[in-house]
Length: 411
Image 1 (cartoon, rainbow, N blue to C red):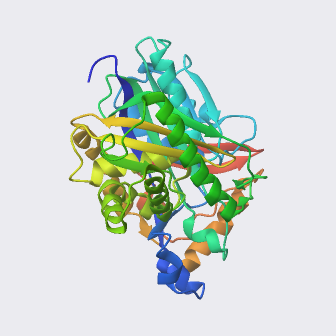
Image 2 (image 1 turned 90 degrees about the horizontal axis):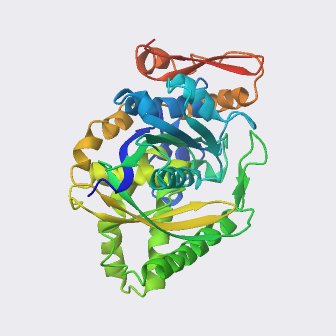
């Protein structure tokens, strides 16, 4: 790696304070867990209390990264989300203040469904490569949470999380190559027509996703010259609205490139794709953080990952866009990511009951467009005290005249 390389220098993930067993959810809904969940490849999903929103999630994910450097080193802040708390004011301005980044920072919010995180990363990479950074770094954050879908068939593939990345020259975690194969179209596959509604067509979404995969792979090939599916990528990352979608995407790409044999395809999936799904299987849908959660999962949990692994990545955003690109792991990245304790943080979340989940989801919905009020605090007894008070996690304290007031749990 050289000083001219550009990529991810640090990465953190925040998966909330609560998790729900999806097998328990299926049983509570009168369904067979095996038949409901096997193809989805899901285990648990993140659940957020009513005093959390995409601002609290984003700030909590980013704070450890910011505290390890001089905030003056950050010259760009870009946030990707489809779950914003405002239709005009970007949440990047909230984060600018909450993270004490100063005033000489370009900041904005981007939206393109689940692609928004990779879109934000691409902007940051281009900002550095163009020389506009003046030696500084970019802070890229992806933050999303699902809306309430109690009793609906797709509530098993919802959830959310936040990821934060520092992007700059001579990165310590991953180098991001500039070549990107892209495909775009107009589809109403999944979308959010209001602040409280999240709707879509599952079949259309599936077919559009797979079309985007095929076309972005083809476009990538025109840029790099006929890439080898087996030789040019040590691992593969696919957008995961649910972990099982990565298995379908892998099978589809194997068919496109002519990689044959049921046993060979299964072995290839287990070796090159499965390790990227560990975090997604504990989060539900990572939304805009999908590729970042998968990359963190690979580096943090795959003991066979080569020191300088080349990882092929597919990002997808409903509406729609697909993009194929490659990143290269920097030797020593595993030690840097291990400082975050991501596996441990996901494991220490409070396991909640289905009744608690139902109550929390209704209370969260009530907060979405609240003009004045405070979030309910005792839906899950003791959670505020055990997972927030005294800890570096941001809390939504109240909404007054549409203005959201936050505080840090340890301040």
